[in-house]
Length: 467
Image (cartoon, rainbow, N blue to C red; front, side, top):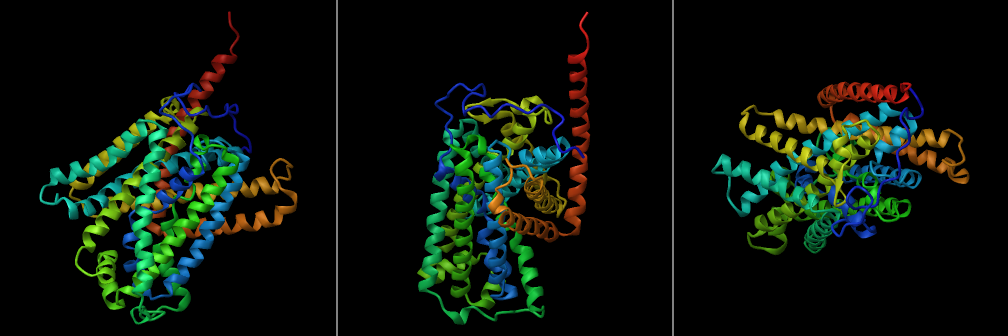
């Protein structure tokens, strides 16, 4: 495999604007607070509201798994910060893989990440409808359910199409609105904490290592999204400095919130009740503050959390194809920007996610949608593995512009830890997801062959002697 791209280096990313470098009042680069909110908002989706009940059957030993995973996620975040300092361009993992290993590796990274984003958006919207139903009952009509799911996808897409200025504003507000009530649960749980509710340290028959591994398999995907600031580096102000900081700060904030809320729910809801709970946060809020308003409160929190995640993931779904299109690896339409946003990427993504959502509600085949979602857990980790491998390549290549001499050993250990964490993510996705995810990746090879052949014809035509 070539260690250098076969196409010319692309020009630096244009300043946020119309796509031609001209300024626009609707486009604005992200500062550190918004970039941090993007990372945190994309990591924390709707899964946090089910996590305590999901890991409760393993006992409080699951908190150990949380701690180990947090260390792995922070190592990955630090590696992305190093890579963004080296290559502060929109595209993140795609840019790093292409720079290190050439066009094909870059394309696979972009293709894999793109699949992840639009399938995940459909999954988020479907999950959000369940919480919306608590506030505005829609379950009685399939048409109303589909309309609600589509509305939850298109509203964030419209915010994206309005320009990066509005994307950043929505993301910051959504992150604050979901952070404060979750923090309230975390702190409120400390006042209602009763160690008798924790249950056994190891609840099942598994060994300690087996219990940690089993609970980790459930928790592994809670940290997907640490790459968010790196993917949008071209829209971040002073990316060499702010991308790394935003990635680490957002990951740390999300990890702290995960751990605090899980511990609070563990200490508030009796273990036997928590194991059987389908709405652990609702049960916890009811016990903390009395009354039966927990369901409404949690539904509001979940909706805000998921809309914020949809807003952020919609932006990311357009950024990677945009970067690949500028290098000729994706169709050129994905490289067009308006108001600082790759509009074609947003539109194609939301249309595909909408079609998948409608299929989920109308096909009548149980398990299809869930299987696709599991596949995305594998496709999301492919860019992580290639990014960490790229960092190892940069460190071991011996080139002075890529290696911080005194910090070489430290960076190498950090990168190996991040690579191990990424490999663990792949293993945790399961055999079926890996098998089907590889099929998704190989389907993209046809697209790469088409684009490569087209670039070759164009290059040959340009080099042909003119009469």
